[in-house]
Image (cartoon, rainbow over all chains, first blue to last red):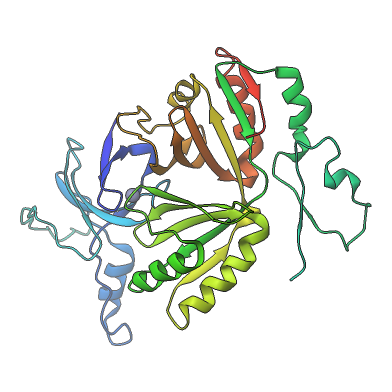
Length: 104
Length: 230
Ligand SMILES: [Zn+2]
């Protein structure tokens, strides 16, 4: 049994009722016509894949069908918090310095 | 609006059997399990078993959605069917006064969504009255009567059948009378309500009704299953 707390149903529910929807807090470029191809490409296609804490969007598909956010550890699967869309996370993610991909 | 003929799936001479084939002037609404012939099954299974199953007659179902205009919906419901919006994961029931006793039940689905049930013949009338009472408020009302089947499980082992069918904790301590949850039932989804002790209501998608009916037959085999009309 793996229970997830739904902030809308206000109780823990079985994992089977939920569906993950990838990285949370993706900000769409404010002016899509004026942004660069790199900005647009990053928004559309590039996602974090951290070893450790990750903020994710989930949906309570078999329950209230609402989307909400989870701060989850991708190594231990521990869920540190769940919060509604529009709310801010309480758990702060560690600052990760990304290496530029090496080519050639 | 002309009255709809609602077929009684337990009647010895059900409407759909009587309606002339191809007579478009006789629109007959049938339940999802009409073809199962529950009347015949009921006589075969007898009564007094651990689990009792029934499919409710065609039930009027309205999906109500409101966000900021929740108060307007609340008062419209109060004047139309004398019912209040239920709390999270709860349901409310009201019975109309007068000679013709109609039962209304409203279920919490999500913070901005509810499911109202009523006699099938009243669904259109209630929808119309809600709309006129709501005026220009931004509230969505959708009649989904044809999309679902309403089933009932009761008996001393009904809870045991649920335990092996759903991932939700249906122990009376957690799932008390009046509580309603959307969850899984075998491979289907269900809106599950605890009507009273050892009595549960399952609202399933019409296309899943056969599957759920077959599942219940197998799952309740060890307790004995009787089919009845609720
Ligand atoms: Zn939920």
